[in-house]
Image 1 (cartoon, helix red, strand yellow):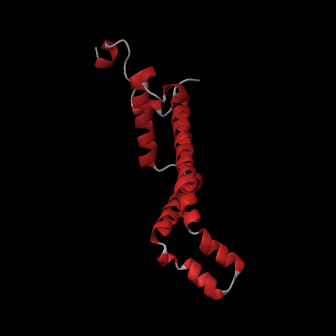
Image 2 (tube, helix red, strand yellow; image 1 turned 90 degrees about the vertical axis):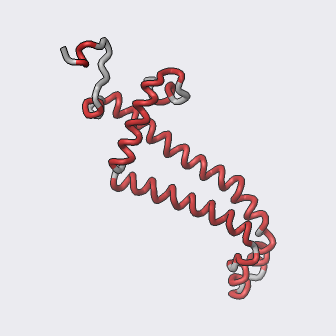
Image 3 (cartoon, one colour; image 1 turned 90 degrees about the horizontal axis):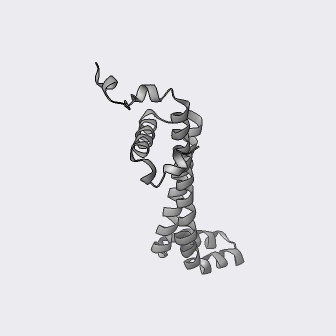
Length: 142
């Protein structure tokens, strides 16, 4: 007898699981959850770091709105004089653009093989751990 016939619950191979519609649906749910988590993180950044950075720049923004000249525009956007709020805004803008590019790539070209493999392995770990895993109800329940 082969080892898979000896055990009552043989572990299916990853190749056979990729054909299973339930497994494919679970991988898709995990990917959707990853997308939502990334956007929630970006929202959190904007609500905390972004709002504090904009608050620190409020006088410069008000001056730009009151006296819109090229000199005021140059001064306001030379964020050299306010390095900490500038860093906060750059972090928020960078994360937003990063998530936009990542999601656009996934929409236009599909998931890369490496990321698909990572998601499949994560679903297998969630299945293996069972109901004690925090994502079990979201990913594995119908």
